[in-house]
Length: 478
Image (cartoon, rainbow, N blue to C red):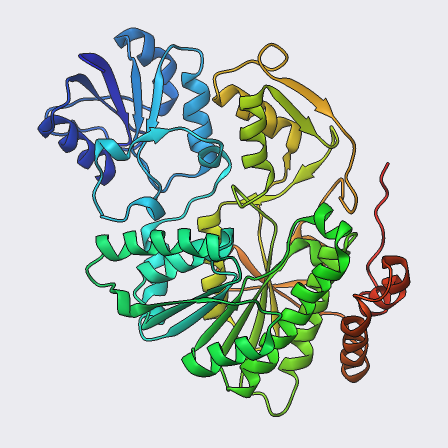
């Protein structure tokens, strides 16, 4: 980057910090000024060269070689707009970290990174959004089950940064727990308000009721978050009994232990696949939602229950984006169907909205999240190829392989398929009226399903599944 012409997009606080870093550090580059839609006055002697719309003129006029985007809380659409204005020129694009990645409250050059698909399709999550939650978190003890998974891990990191009284992390995977432990140690090293005493780590499976009772009874948390679900649709179609044992039996165990120990709040992480499910994973998640209604209705319960539904989370383990990244490197992309669409949200947004639901909730509610506009998967793949600096058909081949078992072509928007009530947060809605059912008969049938799921074939348990989840139906694979 020696003596190259560069510009900084964003003349706010982050842009000023980045300018200071560049001008006081050991960097040899020619900073020509800023691009900003709102600021017009020069900053520390550096001019505002124009607005984002002017980038296509500014880049060739000033022979710009690198564009730095200094807007950590920017909507994906704006990042996409900037990217598309730069793509026709031989320029490098670098971004400062997202808010959730800025642990030290300081921006430095070695934190800059390349643009990614998450930047383009993600939505804005700001420092203020998380800080608005912090006062509710500070004196609380949290337990997160499934703590080492994609959502669980990010939940733990964000809760830790909000300085809870204590955070207890539980997961069955020793290996993934090791990596989570390393991530949490970094938070301790960079945040003087967080210490080792704030964290506890347990290896355990939610299917093991005795172990779960030991952990919950010993720690007496204020809030339980259950993110410990098997979620991969095709795999669960092949392993239906494991989906039932983990998602249904495991959740049932934690519900009952929470009531036993009079835990104040219980948050179930649910899924859009629980709506009109076409697969065993979605059916089991719907059963866990209905179980929540059952346990919330018990007169002896002192626990407040709620469930949060959301869709596909960008970059979660085993999801489409990391799969595409790997396939692009290998030169061959596979998509199940040319018309398949999905709704996406960033992990940061998902975590924020889960915590907001906890603040907004009272008892026995299912919260649904506004996932924005759907994205056609083939368009997502093409954009990812372009970001990688490659050409479709020339560098990367694309093949359509057909829908997988249990997979839907279209996913319904969560806020439109069922009647919902608005909340104080414009991204969060409450299901107005859920399906009515006989609670006693339902829980008896759940117990029957748990008892026989290892002994019967999928075809044999299907009638029981449909009794528990009347909206369950097998998908049209055409």
